[in-house]
Image (cartoon, rainbow, N blue to C red; front, top):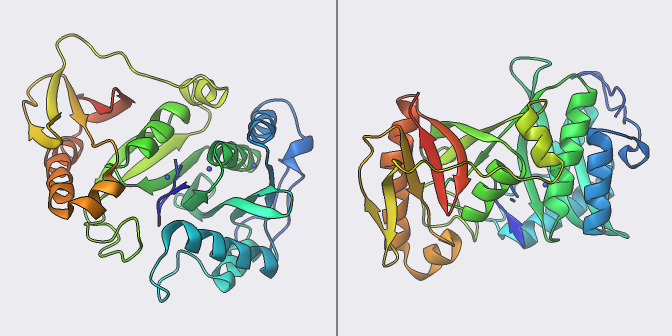
Amino acid sequence: MTGSAPGDANGTAFPSGGGAPHGTGHVPGPDLATEGPGPARQASDAAIRSGVRIRELADFSAFKQVVKLFDDIWHPDPSNPALTPDLMRAMSHAGNYLAGAFDGATLVGASAAFFAAPPGRVLHSHVTGTVRRGAGFALKLHQRAWALARGIDVVTWTCDPLVRRNAYFNLAKLGARPEEYLRDFYGSMADLLNAGDESDRVLAVWRLDEPLVAEACAGRPYVPPIPPDAVVGVAEHEGRPRVGATDARVVLVAIPADIESLRRRDAGLARAWRYAVRDVLGTMMTQGARVTGFAEGCYVVERT
């Protein structure tokens, strides 16, 4: 079971033809499973490999299934669900992206995204969650094909920089790059996976037509080389974060293997990791350093 809310997921760490422009009502595009070749074929192949079928969602029965799925993943406070059926209805009617991954009639993954600024260029993926291995990748490839078919070449989403599986999924398997560090972005969150921690996020930017992204979506994850003169800005020592040097061109920032379990087991240690990564990764990104990949449990950060 994977996911991170709000924010994308696996953002975890999962879409041709012209649909309606923003604000003109929902006009579904063609079934991507019948499209080929290129991004739509990649999406179809990923869905077949994971044993699911991806389709756009546009009716209340499907929206209610999404609410139940997300409740089962995150167990949010009942007063603060990730999405509601009426909001999904409005998003769908306005032509935004809502898709589900189905095993037969059972919903095993869903993703929701809305148009963002600058108009016509960016889609912001608000939440993606799955309970089926491989469904997240299939959903994201569907989302990529859906966006490209509408002339959109950038998809963004927020993700917790401490969740290792999402970092690998976003940076290696999808080829997205964190481009902004957002401190305590959502405020206090009361769901099962995030409770007791501050909601720092990074803004992942997925430039859909870049060669690196195309390679990743073709099943060739990107793992950046680590130069021999790289220094370790945050290391793991006996389970605890240790802050080191950051005075090199390439800096490695380690994150814990399973921050969600750590929050439940030792909230104080989880906060120590939050502050160490915020101080090093957050500061470097604010100063203009670029995250170029994820390797060996570490962000690879390069000074420009």
